[in-house]
Image 1: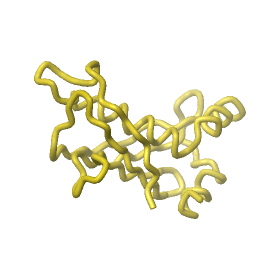
Image 2: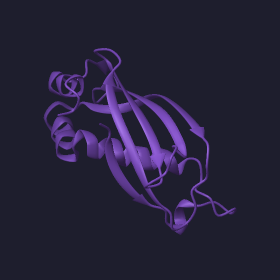
Image 3: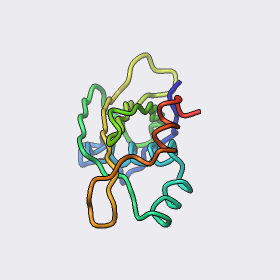
Length: 133
């Protein structure tokens, strides 16, 4: 079952045509991933080890625009693509909708303070592989 993160579309999220500016979906997705993984867990991981997650690859598909005032749900599922990479299937839904308005795959890797690739922390990898329970 995917993690659900609610988003309200504010005026600042839109472009001159009144629809959500495409790059802002990446912000919505980022917030949803951070909530899924746990803000405290991510902050503690960086403080204790100097490790953090960075985007490796993003793929987005826009099927239906969202506009100012929309209430949306960002639905996120995580999988371990390898010991070094997590893949997040993320979708933008209107509550009660029959199809996703925007879909995306965001792949993340773990790096240290100087940007060197490191293995995803074992507790995070185990948590994702167990379904995030």
